[in-house]
Length: 297
Image (cartoon, rainbow, N blue to C red):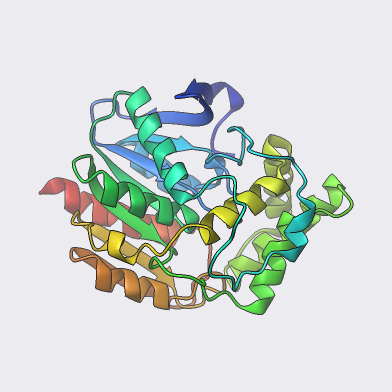
């Protein structure tokens, strides 16, 4: 885990409970890092965060309905088993990606942060895109990692959809079974990448203990599919933008990255061969080097 519980702050901000961590250089440029579907702020690659913290002020948060931030429904959602990842519209969602983007601005306001760079992975990239488009005067740079190009569906394989559904629906309300499913999900999305099985299982157990909330994953998924087409919005992004995407991504097809590059005028795109849908030190290194370019100008 990246942080100890004592380093985390859990505050009511504009009526919403948000868990976040600040670290790094207080007088340096600010970066807000936004994780993906069902993920927690402790899941960023350790080496990446440590490197960034030496040169930037970092703010990492648990999105609503994940980790220690506020829950917007029950821990278990029985209808999660029927979620269809091919739907172009999802009715009955508790919130959408625009609401989640508002959380980022509310947190920045709470911390008296006027300008910042946004780094978002997967769903976090979608949220970061909205923030950059709607708050042009505040966002200095945008890194969109393994994220979408503003359209639906996301192009996940049937196998990937099945794996994700299992992490949203815990039929027996059995934490041990859920932990195993989440562990297998992590294994699946890592693909051919090297990982220590024992370490991965240990980290999964810690994640479940820190923020067990399969229903929250379902509600976040509904937020993604309940948010309208964002292509026109992406055309409103004019800040330096880095788009990274794995060619082997089975969760969000890499054609989304190509579309994002088409829509954002100042975007740089790099497709990574043999890389799936996960946060890696390789991604982190590329973001780190790109940020050095952006903030040296």
